[in-house]
Image (cartoon, rainbow, N blue to C red; front, top):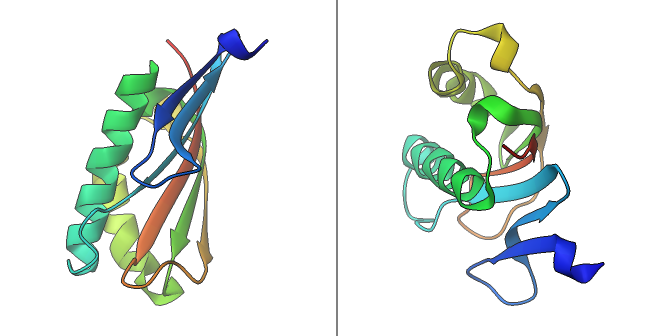
Amino acid sequence: MDHDIKRLAARGPGRSRAVAFGSLVWVVANTANVNADFAGQVADTLLRLDQSLRDIGSNRERMLSVQVLLADIGSRNAFDVVWQEWIGPDPATWPQRSCFQVDLAPGLLIEIVAVAARE
């Protein structure tokens, strides 16, 4: 039933930044500043991911699966450094994670798609 689905509006029309159904949430995050360098876009994207997870009733420790979409797979090592600090040292809270190189919107260097459990 549609009333069991919670949706959080995205910046653009026709899509949601987060959707919850039952005990699961689906979240997508990217930067609002496509003029930032890679480090700046990663920091902003992770900040927005945290916010969307909170807004939909979850948090980073409850993420189950994460797909990291990179405009350049060569930036994976730089991302890993930031990711490892952000996700923390406890393997009990680490999601399954994969990285892909994809064509993103102009100026966008990273996008993160996550599935998490609700609190």
